[in-house]
Image (cartoon, rainbow, N blue to C red; front, top):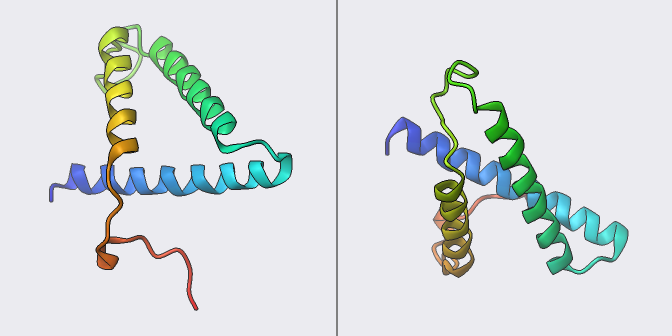
Amino acid sequence: MSEFERRRQQAETHLKLQMMKEMSEIMRRTGLPPMVLMLEAARALGTIYRETAEAHCETSCCPCGWRPQEARDLGRLHETLCEASRRPRSRWLGGMQVLGNA
């Protein structure tokens, strides 16, 4: 596994755990159903995309090299959401994230 892939997987795991924690807390506090919160999470991600894209519209604004291409980027986000929502759960316990201790 490349260093980039390792860091990408760490970021994915961290974001997933934090989002699950926050959504669980919000559902507990507000009583809102999961789909309402998922729609709000999608709205928040869209806003984050827009703000990040606007911050990267100048060629000299950031050394990361990303240049937003809205149609392509949003298409990739859509494809990734669909893929992740259809991905079968892992049945291999060795590959699962440890969440606590007994």
